[in-house]
Image (cartoon, rainbow, N blue to C red; front, side, top):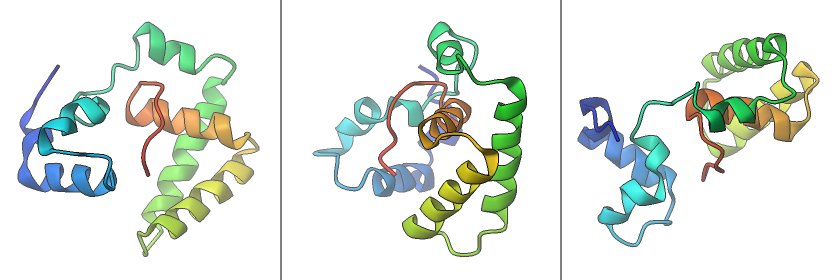
Length: 117
């Protein structure tokens, strides 16, 4: 497990705690509750590759480009605004929401888990 300085700054850990919204009992639970927040994504391992079964490279690239563009243009960063932006982008991409979220999950972590946000 890579505990690079990016993942151990006080600011990063604070954001992780906020994102986990009460799922932690103690601070020591943080690395085991959300290990994907503390390692670089392993996009090429078997689990990550399996996540993309049935998703074309073109769809993956379109989802990523559209989502990045939409989120960069989003001025209000709250749960509802981001949720709405992701649902809109899913519709534009023409991909079912579960597959759309799998692409994002792959890009962000390379692991097949549900994020708490």
